[in-house]
Amino acid sequence: MKCLADVVHLSQTQVKRAKKKTFSPHLFPGMTTKKDRQECKCVLAADLKNRSSMILKHMSEKFNADTDQMKHEMPSVINAVLQCYGGDCSDCAEKSAGTCAGGDSDNWFVRSRSLRENGITALHPSETDIQTMREILLIVLGDEGIEKTWGLSTTQSNEAANRALSSRCPKNVKFSKSITARVGSAILTCNNGPGDAQRKISHRLGLPMSRGQKRYHAAEQKRNTYSQRHRRSPSTQTRRLQQDAKTRRDKLKRRQQAQLPSDYKKHQLDDSSSSSDSIPGGESPDKRLRRSVRRDHKYHCL
Image 1 (cartoon, rainbow, N blue to C red):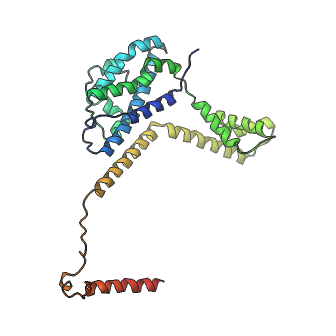
Image 2: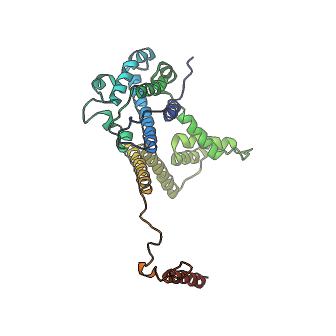
Image 3: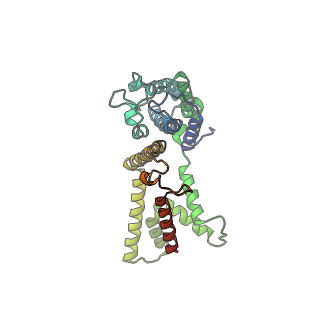
């Protein structure tokens, strides 16, 4: 019996490992500060995860989940992917597992939404960077990763059921009589949606439903279906990536503006003509007048 791993969790491990790696300063052209390179490294980690998932899915469909054939073919795929990141797409059309077509207008830097939205159009990896990226890809695309992800099984449905049970049956409350009904209602809602679940419960119990109740449950079911499709749609995912990229650009712009030297100078508002006619204490009459006005205004507000 194979010991399988969740594909999503294994991909998250891949991202965490990639963020801890150290890349050369010249990997991201145009990024001169350490903070900018760190943010680009996070984008690259997410991109490696997404591309690994696409490759794994493509190879599983191509060889009908035959792990032996996938293991035999995967080294050439990884080499082609690493060459693609380095700018050589000569082998991508045949060996990149459908992720890159190899053309100028249809390569991976154009297809990848995470790279495109963050303005990364090229990479300059060194030999050490290539080896580091290979280690990251092998977490999912290596022999051990292929064995663990056989069948592309996930535990997302189990986690969704656990979240639904936690919302209906919180651990800090004891349901001595209604626990069975609450669990059944949570599972029924997960499988059918809130509107259809309520209609089935009413039909099972023999409870009549008015016309208004039927309209309400139908509208609730429609909202739930629309919300699920909206979250999973490519346009929503693209918009989320665009917003993340915009937030990152705004942070970079604010940092650059904060590093600019200020043109403020002390006593720049003082009148130069009255500076010579100052009191012995070193305070000009205009400055003393402004201070008295602020003090009177303060007392007036109180």
